[in-house]
Image (cartoon, rainbow, N blue to C red):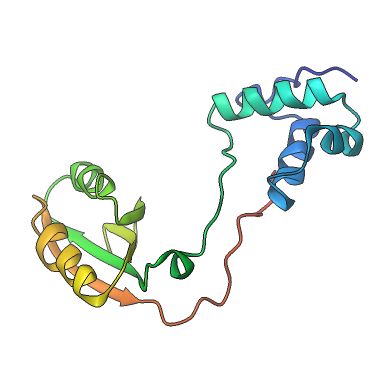
Length: 158
């Protein structure tokens, strides 16, 4: 079996690359040797494919943490209505460290942000003072997280 992916779409995703991604979605620390055994490639070929996939931005290998265990006592989603262009607002919000996820939407809000903070006071400061001060932010609505029911990063590959 070749260690080069078959050209499809962006040229990096063939069935073997998909299998490698699925292996890493199950366990991001799985060894290249174990992945190679599962997908029929050498350890070196797996390492090269993973490097190409990460360099191309197809995937990232990261440590997923529990914010509560790290001292972030509050998590929330903030819905934002904007005036004018949405992209500059999203870009400005994405620069704030406490905001861990920013997406422009076609629904009831122009932008949704997921935020983490150590306390209610920090969350209030973030939303009321800093987020609302971003040019183009018309209004915000905050949805406090009470209990996490599901979190997954393994949505498979197509």
